[in-house]
Amino acid sequence: MNETRRAVLDALADGPVAGPALADEFGISRAAVWKHVEALRDAGFEVESASDGYALAGLPEYGAAAVEFGLDAPFDVEYHDAVASTNDRARELASEGASDTVVLADRQTGGRGRRGREWSSPSGGVWLSLVLRPDVPPARVPLVTLAAAVAVTDAARDAGVDAAIKWPNDCIVPRRDSERGGDKLAGVLTEMEGEASRVSWAVVGVGVNADVNPDELAGDATSVRAEAGGVDRRAFVQRFLERFDELRDDPDAILGAWRERAATLGQRVRVDTADGDVVGDAVDVTEHGALVVETDSGREVVHAGDCQHLRPVDGA
Ligand code: BTN
Image 1 (cartoon, protein in one colour):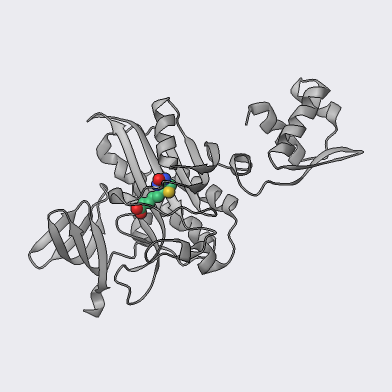
Image 2 (spheres, rainbow, N blue to C red):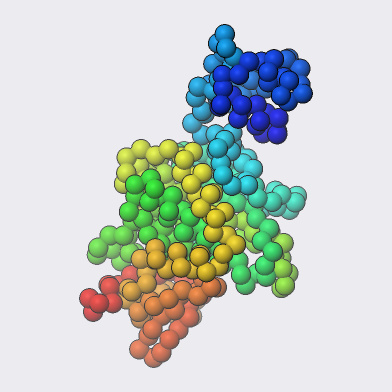
């Protein structure tokens, strides 16, 4: 949304305000004011017009303008009703030079998960990708992924879901006796381009089973709707973006928050890695996003793999 339109919208939110007063305030014609009001109505904002002027009476439920309105974080939003993959679109924008941009979709037709898996993305989910240009070497990018996992967990908790983080970066609803540790609510897929010393761009894709029926999803999945009833996707995305923005430049805060929300730490785990299974007690996560596992033959640092929660360490 352009700057004047955004300013007109803010004025309407504090309204009622008369058309001529808006024209004076922004140095534009009355016809231009009217055009901005009509464009806002087209974008789904309810603008009342009474004898004392225009006033904002309602917001669009979802979409770029809805998420940008009142957002306390410096992101531009590009919205699609349907797209193959928000990560693919974000990569295109990254290669064109975009930064701090969010690609958001109601549905994806070719959603991608970690390890080349498909990611079910029916209408009603929160499917988004952040285009970022962190001024760090590639080895620090995992911290950005950890920050996204914390932010999505906090947004889910605010929406009333008992959410926690499962290594590496899944957001789950913990269940006793579940080998996977619980049912999956959200996942994070980070991709990047750069040189050894500096990242050129990073795309952080986040998929949240928000207002969807878990029957439409693959595997042991749950959704915000199933756990907490309805969900306001606009509020969810705003909370996620604001929390992510708060954390992203603060490695200590990211690691501390990740550890506090981790369902995996303190569990006996089996991690299926490219070099075989690692079994032991999950004791920590490193700033590179690796899991530290205390095994019978010593401490191992596991960088990638699928993790099963076998049982709490104390219950051994
Ligand atoms: C995982 O396997 O847990 C990661 C899933 C990441 C899915 C999200 S949905 C938005 C973005 N676009 C994609 O194609 N994938 C990510």
